[in-house]
Length: 356
Image 1: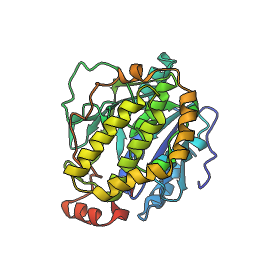
Image 2: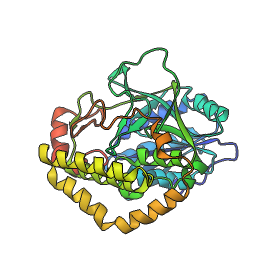
Image 3: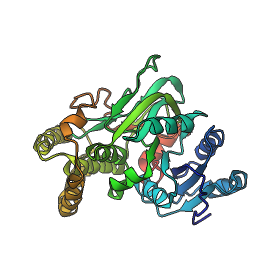
């Protein structure tokens, strides 16, 4: 199980689940995957060095999966690196990026495969992610990117209404996204320097500029098991969010759009530094990008060489906003097992703060 090699010729989908200290959540996710109506599913759990009993629980379940559940333990390098590790092991035409705190509806994979089959130009599909604490409320229906480089979940906090229509998006939350393996690999997969945050919006942007479409469908529903109340983001998470946002703009924005986005990024960042706390990690994020500008420029050349769609057309798939309609103001939701005291402990200890 340490080196997954069991994908069979009839398998269609490799499910890649990055995880870290979420054994109970992971078991619930695996149970939902076991109920899927689609056949030919191979699951790889990529463990970012959990200290709980994640490995034991996965191994205990493996016998019931007939060789289609594998476990790989790796250094704690974040979900972007874990997803790439799973993608590299996939021997199927499709990959489902699936977080360990997600629970899929029983027909999710079957329906998602049908949408991809009906749309040859679709690189990835997703749908409604709803909150477990209120399944009538949307966590995400795809994602958007503003002129400042900020990325956010479309529909966050809104009521789940009947009559929703499919829609093209700039990106899809990788909590539950089914994609074509070859399209993701050709786009450069996930940027492993991101560690946490913006890795899915960055990939979606690159898939779009390479001429693919990413689309959400209302019949694809997944449940996200997170706390009802957001908690303060740890400074290390703030650092990664800020550095990743700038790197994504520098790499992906077209030559015509880059000056506008950099100006908007600078204006927003200046206001953020002046008006909010957490200045040190935000300044470190800028310094990180300056130090790695040569590396980012090389990635930019490669990315722009694959461009076939102008950013104007890509951003038409968004809402045209500069800022998210529901700002979290430096807060984020965590796993649903956290208590108020758990939040305090996580804020005090980066190693216990979810992905960190």
